[in-house]
Image (cartoon, rainbow, N blue to C red; front, side, top):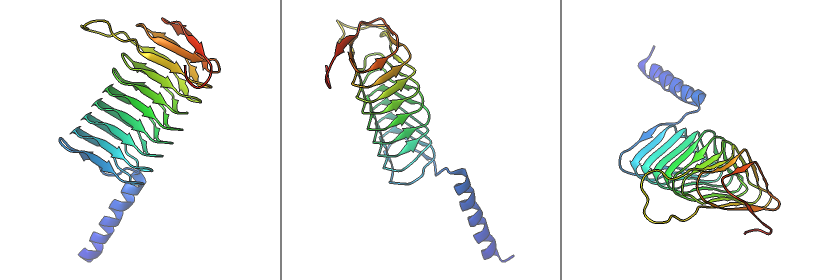
Length: 218
């Protein structure tokens, strides 16, 4: 076989294999941000010092950084997201098939965004805008705003702080908005300020007393 023909066949096989696997190229950095453009498909994305952004319609598998935020545009998808120092933001209709983890950073879900698994952080605010989390929410010091028409399955856990703390700490503020649904136990192992809309539906509450409110906000 002519070597040029053989090379063409080999390249064709590679492209067919990539298409069959549905996985794009992996990106692994120490310093620097990572950017996946609209409708592009990537594999695992990892950096130590830098942010990660996937534009609208783009996709990746595992997405992780240490010092930097993670942002997914509208309808972008990934298997999991993980950061230590940085926030996580999902655009409208973005979808995560697994878990979302942050340590020092908030988690914001745009309209119709979906996290199939568990969402956890230590410090940082959760905001859901008519969004869905399938595996529950966990935090220690973060505020939680379950916006109107949002749904959370697996309950909510606000854990007590561990280690030393100086002075009196501010109570986390937890708001369950109009027509929102939280299935499972809402468990509070520290003092919180809990507000539940009179049109919301929630599971059993332990460790806190809910204050009912009407209208859009307490």
